[in-house]
Image (cartoon, rainbow, N blue to C red):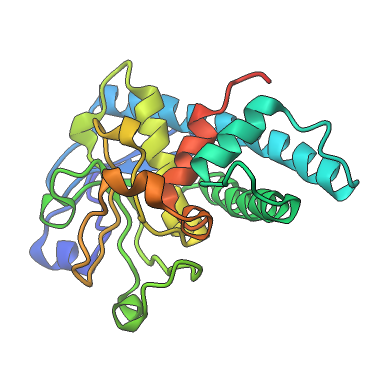
Length: 248
């Protein structure tokens, strides 16, 4: 769908975007640009993968919640627990209460991510190089966040749409793209921050557009991140979903 204006500035200067229907969502180009057939195909396949993995991991997390609420952790998968502890920085000697809180919080946040990505007509927009630079994706933070504290427990308000650098959309990279989609969706729909990035994702790093100039968090800080920070960290959720074994 040509001649689509997704900002007032675009309409004023008369530079329209290309808006292409991809399955049940839209891919939107930069002003004056286009969405190629390959970009649309890779983005569509990546979204399908992200949604499928979210469904699978939410089902596992739901079963784990039920087991713990029933007073037993005997039915928890070893692989599930290892992934949970690694991605959400749960100490090996953590109490049952900490594990229970981690599962409950992760389930709540991932449920919101699932709902948000499942919204019909959601838009994935090509990144603005002046805002995202070489980052693979971002979501613009709400302006009121400029005056708020950087608090590990407080969720953040993101007012923008999910952006992805379409130049990175290549066949065969669907898993990496799905990781970034979930990462950015964790910002937009679950209020997660960027405390650190998974070291393994250095080839395609997503970043929060932090308007307060805090900058891009160090990947090297991953192992120093606390459980509270990890439960409010976008890449923890993306890694938890995409690194979980497909069948436990």
